[in-house]
Length: 448
Image 1 (cartoon, rainbow, N blue to C red):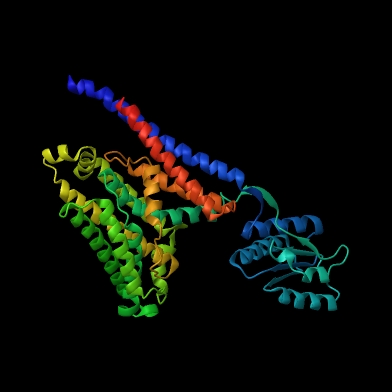
Image 2: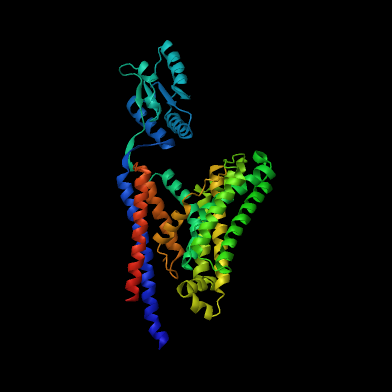
């Protein structure tokens, strides 16, 4: 009978969980829609597509016999613009096409030569940037030198591919650290040291690479050694937190607050309070490289969340964490090694904070003792907004991932809108407060 009675309750709990998860996704999508509308503005085509667009309009209005000048700066997208335009001109059979990829001075030299030969171009293909060059006004004549710029269309700054990839890349570091923080909070604990441990790992990795590995000439084994040293130091910091919590019976708030100060001070001493920049270019691949157009930290984030989801939902480890968070005494009486689990989780939290430090240093190609300031608050906010209860025993990795993206989207959207940092802090504080209030209301409804 108890099993029969339990089935409806299990189904009801599963439905509530699904509604919570899908509700978080809907909130994220709603925020993305709002910021897309608020950042909607005319956007010029770029790259190859822009070049083809301009070339097609020139041919339509001036024909393939016109004298054409392609004048663009030296950026990568500008070169793609020129390549796209020239491809269209070549296909059409246009033969009087001159291309200048350079500065306004380079274009002026070319126009002077064309003016001396009385062969000024009938049409000039330019990007949005080169259309502002004053050199074109000097050689303008009625019906001659008409500038053709890429077409524009309404598109949100928020939904630009570069912006979305940037949001994902920046979120990845917070989200990876939030995996460990989710486990900690499920246990009814807190870890305030993750930001400082990140900084300690950052300077440890870069100092080892610089001093023991050869600096900018360091080999891959030396880079790997620096990263392993950073992970070992960060795991040790987490393990010390766990020991003080379990052996000395100190509150996690005080233990991790002390570690926050110790780790930050250690990072400052190791680095002599200086940024460490003598790093080989190969070190940048882990945090600054990409695979299939997606930044490497995003791939790592997805991998860690898949593994963490499996651990929390399909293994004894996860079931024990939820049991301890729900009722530590009952878990102990059931034979679960409560103190060992706490020690292990805090070690994992420190290790993931160290990985975040390596990724941040790799992305910025430098180590710095100032990295990670206020990260602990950002990470805790992501976990709480994602639905993990500060009272322990309830939370999911999927929710934390969505919570991390909600925080990142809010911050990115406000940056695009030019909202000052103080106002951003107020908004994010309000979001965190609302998340805590929502958790309290949910628990009251559940108990009733």
